Image (cartoon, rainbow over all chains, first blue to last red; front, side, top):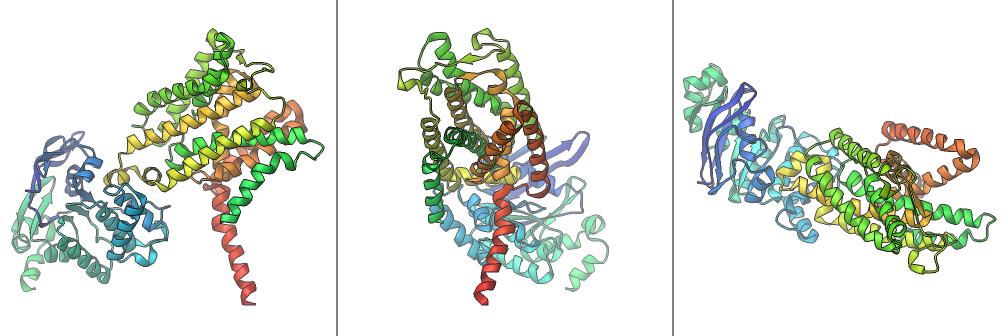
Length: 244
Length: 327
């Protein structure tokens, strides 16, 4: 078991954003998290990534209890994450952005730079390496975030709506990139609203609603689950999926 | 680029000789020394405020520690002031730890406000502490027969001492900029949350920046006290000391290697000129100029003059040059 989150809860005052969610991820999996806006997916994600401390429950990564560890410890142990709203370093170039990630495993500048250049090529940002991040559009920023995380050499990657706001063509390219990352042996947990992405990429899907996980299973199980249809997909989606 | 560096180095090295032939040689040499001192202080502030983006408005506490310790040793125990320089650095590092550990949990304006509060507190305590001369301050040696007391009649020896320290500081900053520390500090400035997610131990690195910055600010304070031979709570610990460090760095370009140097090269002559032209009332004018500079930088070019050059002037010059080649 690579990641095990047990009964994770997070409350903000009297509001329970996550009310006891479990997630177990095996090495090499791609797991999808879906749910309506405000269901608690991102809060749950932030608890796993070390950005928020869970009010209750336990998060264990590769045998190490990281429940109360800061985000930088998560990164050091091999958990990488992207942000829903890309948090690129605007005044730094793309190469410099990725080097910040690469410095985690390669403290020397030359080694970090070589590693970053390799990853920039792989993620298709090679032509813009010397441009400042602020000059990139949404697809470029999302790619840069992925590149930066890859540079930290993670074992588990948490992608928080990494494909939201992309055109269909860009989504296809981004999905190809996710598959390539998976082929490198990196385990992936992906929060996504674009159902096509979840259904194509994930082998297992968990559905969040009002802070609870209301269903989990294969993508096919999920699209046919009446509770999921009621809470998130809407009537007609299951039929469409079956027809597809 | 290499020629630019050589020209800058040559200009700085030869400045006292170049102005020696003029009618106001001593005045210009003194101004040169003061500009270098301002550049040291601003470059030191720049490590924390510019590169790491942590706007300290309390750096006067480090400047003051560096300024007070050498003169304290001399006035109270007749020890060479030079011995107080490392002691000042030691006290500054201690202060940096005491201030940094709790306040680096704070972000943005809260950190700035905390630094103002601590610095003002220290100024008030020192103003009432007899050992430190209270409101009157401390005095250094008059003309000493020993070279190690660093009392010179001419500004030229001070000029070269300051130039030496500035060179060391710029080399340290240049190395920092290219190393993991430099990249991490810029990442912290751009976004702490994202930096943390990439494995940057944000608080620890902010503390490194503060300690490095405090060390050189303290040195600037010591050099100031050794040159003027006098320090009081206002000139060593007043909030305007901190403000001047910030404005000098911000005017030239905070977060750049040479920005503080450029800021000092503009501000110090300006300040000296207003003081000369308007006498005692000139000090009031200096504050008006400071205020105007803050407004102009914040409104038009938060990156300072170096950014203005890089983004607005240099591209136009490049275009014109290309145009003339095409013609």
